Image (cartoon, rainbow, N blue to C red):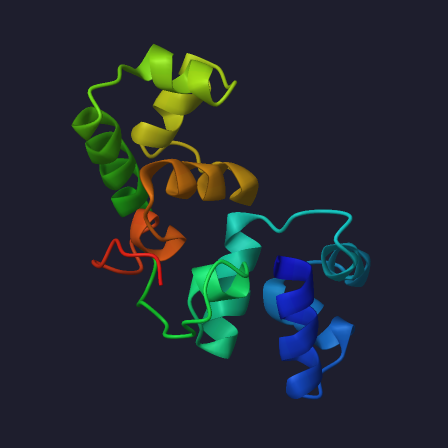
Length: 146
Protein backbone atom coordinates (compact mmCIF):
# COMPACT_ATOMS: atom_id res chain seq x y z
CA UNK A 1 0.00 0.00 0.00
CA UNK A 2 1.26 3.48 -0.90
CA UNK A 3 1.22 4.93 2.62
CA UNK A 4 3.40 2.12 3.96
CA UNK A 5 5.75 2.13 1.00
CA UNK A 6 6.33 5.90 1.00
CA UNK A 7 6.92 5.92 4.77
CA UNK A 8 9.47 3.08 4.46
CA UNK A 9 11.28 4.76 1.58
CA UNK A 10 11.33 8.12 3.36
CA UNK A 11 12.76 6.59 6.53
CA UNK A 12 15.34 4.52 4.61
CA UNK A 13 16.58 7.71 2.98
CA UNK A 14 16.44 9.57 6.31
CA UNK A 15 14.20 12.28 4.85
CA UNK A 16 11.57 14.45 6.46
CA UNK A 17 7.96 14.61 5.38
CA UNK A 18 8.52 18.28 4.59
CA UNK A 19 11.37 17.48 2.22
CA UNK A 20 9.29 14.94 0.31
CA UNK A 21 6.35 17.34 0.21
CA UNK A 22 8.67 19.78 -1.57
CA UNK A 23 9.80 17.07 -3.97
CA UNK A 24 6.16 16.25 -4.78
CA UNK A 25 5.21 19.95 -4.94
CA UNK A 26 2.48 19.54 -2.34
CA UNK A 27 1.99 21.01 1.11
CA UNK A 28 3.37 19.41 4.25
CA UNK A 29 -0.20 18.72 5.37
CA UNK A 30 -1.02 16.99 2.08
CA UNK A 31 2.05 14.79 2.45
CA UNK A 32 1.18 13.92 6.06
CA UNK A 33 -2.30 12.91 4.86
CA UNK A 34 -0.77 10.72 2.14
CA UNK A 35 1.54 9.01 4.58
CA UNK A 36 -1.29 8.56 7.07
CA UNK A 37 -3.44 7.01 4.36
CA UNK A 38 -6.24 9.56 4.74
CA UNK A 39 -5.89 10.68 1.12
CA UNK A 40 -4.57 9.25 -2.13
CA UNK A 41 -1.79 10.84 -4.17
CA UNK A 42 -2.57 12.38 -7.51
CA UNK A 43 -0.90 10.72 -10.44
CA UNK A 44 1.34 13.79 -10.78
CA UNK A 45 2.45 13.45 -7.15
CA UNK A 46 3.01 9.73 -7.52
CA UNK A 47 5.12 10.22 -10.63
CA UNK A 48 7.19 12.96 -8.98
CA UNK A 49 7.99 10.67 -6.05
CA UNK A 50 8.67 7.62 -8.25
CA UNK A 51 11.00 9.71 -10.42
CA UNK A 52 12.77 11.15 -7.37
CA UNK A 53 13.44 7.70 -5.88
CA UNK A 54 13.95 6.12 -9.32
CA UNK A 55 11.36 3.39 -8.70
CA UNK A 56 8.35 2.07 -10.59
CA UNK A 57 4.87 3.40 -9.93
CA UNK A 58 3.67 -0.10 -9.15
CA UNK A 59 6.39 -0.50 -6.53
CA UNK A 60 5.49 2.82 -4.93
CA UNK A 61 1.82 1.80 -4.82
CA UNK A 62 2.70 -1.52 -3.18
CA UNK A 63 1.50 -3.55 -6.19
CA UNK A 64 4.89 -5.21 -6.76
CA UNK A 65 8.27 -5.72 -5.16
CA UNK A 66 9.97 -4.87 -8.47
CA UNK A 67 11.56 -1.44 -7.93
CA UNK A 68 12.83 -1.04 -11.50
CA UNK A 69 11.92 2.32 -12.94
CA UNK A 70 10.27 2.07 -16.32
CA UNK A 71 11.18 5.36 -17.94
CA UNK A 72 9.63 8.76 -18.37
CA UNK A 73 5.90 9.33 -18.42
CA UNK A 74 4.37 10.15 -21.76
CA UNK A 75 0.81 11.30 -20.99
CA UNK A 76 -0.57 10.82 -24.51
CA UNK A 77 0.55 7.22 -24.19
CA UNK A 78 -1.95 6.74 -21.36
CA UNK A 79 -4.81 7.78 -23.65
CA UNK A 80 -3.58 5.53 -26.46
CA UNK A 81 -3.07 2.49 -24.26
CA UNK A 82 -6.34 2.94 -22.43
CA UNK A 83 -8.26 3.00 -25.70
CA UNK A 84 -6.31 0.05 -27.15
CA UNK A 85 -6.95 -2.08 -24.08
CA UNK A 86 -10.64 -1.18 -24.02
CA UNK A 87 -11.07 -1.96 -27.72
CA UNK A 88 -9.22 -5.25 -27.29
CA UNK A 89 -11.97 -6.26 -24.87
CA UNK A 90 -14.65 -5.21 -27.36
CA UNK A 91 -16.32 -2.80 -24.95
CA UNK A 92 -17.67 0.62 -25.94
CA UNK A 93 -17.01 3.80 -23.97
CA UNK A 94 -20.43 3.81 -22.30
CA UNK A 95 -20.14 0.21 -21.11
CA UNK A 96 -16.64 0.78 -19.80
CA UNK A 97 -17.59 4.01 -18.02
CA UNK A 98 -20.55 2.26 -16.42
CA UNK A 99 -18.30 -0.58 -15.26
CA UNK A 100 -16.24 1.95 -13.29
CA UNK A 101 -19.18 4.14 -12.26
CA UNK A 102 -17.86 7.21 -14.06
CA UNK A 103 -19.53 9.33 -16.70
CA UNK A 104 -18.90 8.45 -20.34
CA UNK A 105 -17.87 12.08 -20.85
CA UNK A 106 -15.16 11.85 -18.17
CA UNK A 107 -13.94 8.55 -19.55
CA UNK A 108 -13.85 9.95 -23.09
CA UNK A 109 -11.66 12.77 -21.75
CA UNK A 110 -9.17 10.15 -20.54
CA UNK A 111 -9.02 8.46 -23.94
CA UNK A 112 -8.65 11.81 -25.69
CA UNK A 113 -5.78 12.77 -23.41
CA UNK A 114 -7.66 15.83 -22.16
CA UNK A 115 -7.70 14.77 -18.52
CA UNK A 116 -5.96 12.28 -16.27
CA UNK A 117 -7.87 10.29 -13.69
CA UNK A 118 -6.85 10.13 -10.05
CA UNK A 119 -4.56 7.33 -8.93
CA UNK A 120 -7.30 5.02 -7.59
CA UNK A 121 -9.00 5.12 -11.00
CA UNK A 122 -5.71 4.49 -12.86
CA UNK A 123 -4.98 1.57 -10.51
CA UNK A 124 -8.49 0.19 -11.06
CA UNK A 125 -7.99 0.38 -14.84
CA UNK A 126 -4.61 -1.36 -14.53
CA UNK A 127 -6.16 -4.08 -12.36
CA UNK A 128 -9.04 -4.53 -14.80
CA UNK A 129 -6.68 -4.97 -17.75
CA UNK A 130 -4.13 -6.90 -15.64
CA UNK A 131 -1.27 -4.58 -16.61
CA UNK A 132 1.14 -2.50 -14.59
CA UNK A 133 0.42 1.15 -13.88
CA UNK A 134 3.79 1.93 -15.44
CA UNK A 135 2.66 0.33 -18.70
CA UNK A 136 -0.71 2.08 -18.66
CA UNK A 137 0.77 5.56 -18.20
CA UNK A 138 3.61 5.03 -20.68
CA UNK A 139 6.60 4.46 -18.40
CA UNK A 140 7.09 0.90 -19.69
CA UNK A 141 6.49 -1.07 -22.84
CA UNK A 142 6.13 -4.25 -20.81
CA UNK A 143 2.53 -4.72 -19.67
CA UNK A 144 3.41 -7.44 -17.13
CA UNK A 145 2.72 -6.88 -13.46
CA UNK A 146 5.65 -8.20 -11.45
